[in-house]
Amino acid sequence: MKPARQLYLLGLFVLVGLVAFSSILNSYFLSDDFVLIGNILGGHVSPNLAISQGGFFRPILILSYIIEVRVWGTRPLGFHLANVTLHSLNAFLTYILSFRLVQNLSLSERRKLLISLGAGFLFLLHPSHTETVSWISGRVDLIATFFCLACLISFAIYEKTRRTLHLALSFLAFALALLSKESAICLPFLLLIIGLALGEERRDKESIKRLLKVLALFMLILLVFVAVRSAFIGALVGGYGAAEHLNFSPGWLRVRLLQASLRSILPALPSQWSLFLFKPLQSRTFGIIALLVSAITAISIITRRQMYARVERHEQNGFLLALLLMFLFSLLPVINLRLSLYDTQGERFVYLPTIFTCLALSYLSAILVRNRRVWMVILICWLGFYTAALYHTNQRWRDAAQVSRTVLEDLSDSATHDRILIINTPDNLNGVHLYRNGLPEALVYFQHQRVFKQVETVAYQNFQSVADEVTTIADGNLLTVSSPVNEDTFWRVAPTECAQIIRQTPNSLHLKREPCAANADVFAFSKGRMSRLEPASYQK
Image (cartoon, rainbow, N blue to C red):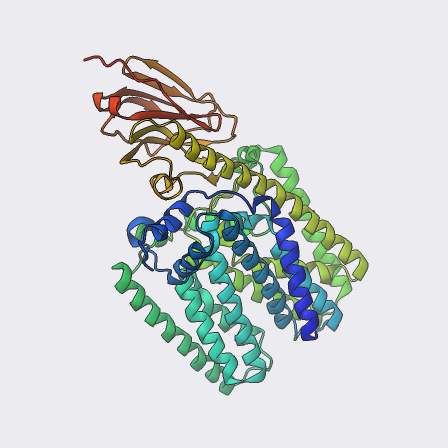
């Protein structure tokens, strides 16, 4: 395709991305946003997030925030625009990479182009990308994936042209990807698959030896990065800790692989499905779904055997196997980390792997449906399904952002003291982060009505809906806080200087306010608002 047409196509990807995510462009900051951006506002600039974020070394991410804080300050629009633009660029690069990967297949040039475009737009509108794109703090995966794609594309061009410039660009992109997020350590394995399975020539001993020498240079860059990162964070593993990152128990990995595989194709599942997924053998619904999936798979296999000769099926199997391996290797650095089937929590971990599932979906549908018009109708329907699911999920993020802004305004407008005691800080809204982190930073850097010397939280609470009510009953210095919704549970419960915990259950807290609470404003969250409680008449 001519460069001018590529430029028009890039503009189309950006335009569709902006329209698809238009509902969250003005959404307020959430959770870690307050920490990351607040630290920069406060002059605490460091590439090392070890103290507050568990041991990460991500200087490229911090640099992007430094630039944007100077341009936008605390206006969220610019940060969201950057996220959506980055995501659109990644979708365009997914199209470019896909077109490079399908070049050696026995398909017409037009079909190769359509498959690649299908993969790019599936990636652009994928509903499992909301946490990465709609959450400003999800940018780390956007930046890292951008450099990962640049590395893979440069290497694929090098494999065809043998030009040193493209190899050097691949090295540079790999280094920048590592400095963006540690999960880029999977790149040498992805490059190996491109070199062996998807290379331009039939491999002989000399070409394999050359490939291994090139990959050795990538491994050298990786070793240098590990040394530099360890020096900055003071640990080899870092991150969320060795207990989580090095948990390779078979049961844990099996569950995580199943969750990641489903979420790389489907949006978050309805929470009601957890009942039959938890006990599938006792569920008629699960049996029906399993039967349908088995029937579709069997029909697809039979149809393909009738449509293609053995040589063609061998080529298709090899390409699909290569995509499967690339999916698994890109998932490997994050396979230990938690991912929810029923909401958006943790879906940022499958952002990079979905590149290969989107290409696999586009390719599979193209070889099973030879009629181009029918294939395009199927693709458009699939994109429509993705768009509807994406819009629905983004509504949750918009609602959560509104609650985040409201909480900050309620605290700053209603407080009369410079000390705040919050009984139940909202942790998340149906899986969307609210104030799991960042409330102190939000009160310091994102509002200027009042200066607070101390902010304490007794417990964090999950909420399923903005309308969920929390009942607060005060009896002198005794306080009972409870929720009628079973899923609205309290966690991270800890006594504070001004509140002693008498008894707790998943849905209720029984507290005793200490005398120091008389010099603090006590707040409780309910129905999307923070309400100041009346001062207690303290009893000995």
